[in-house]
Image 1 (cartoon, rainbow, N blue to C red):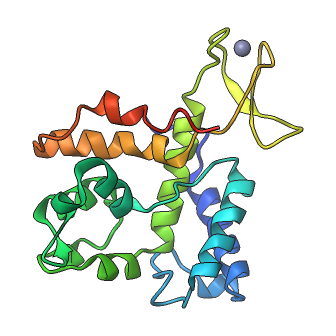
Image 2: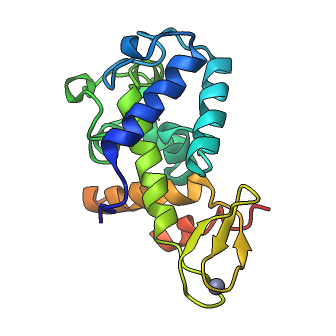
Length: 203
Ligand SMILES: [Zn+2]
């Protein structure tokens, strides 16, 4: 599954540089385990800046919602948040989809706000890696050759026939992981192929 062309250390360095620049910090102050909101003091506008820079640097489209937003869309919010805290199902989803998340925090009573404030730089790195892996597996619908990043526009271009295609949406790329995890947990949610295609119609 892991694409040998995807170099975790190099991606990590690049993400750290982007985060440091957006927050006016030295890259030495930013570590994979740094919590973006609570340790580094990011605000919403900083996150937009970081997201835009990651998209340009890696040729990806980040999802518009985080894991909890995506999970609420697909499994129903009532299955994700119960009484103001994350449900046992949500905690188990996070354990499986974000193994880099500090596991001891994943206990009953964790609120969505606690969860978001504990997101680390490493989680950003992992999202970038998953989106790069997803992109590398796409094949041209016309001739089945691979895509590469277009040299002239932020889009994909078939290496054989030149067909161009928009970068896949982050939601589309990441929901497959949620669906797999839900199946493993035994959650009786919608079948993965019906949810995985819902983002295909974006312009
Ligand atoms: Zn082609």
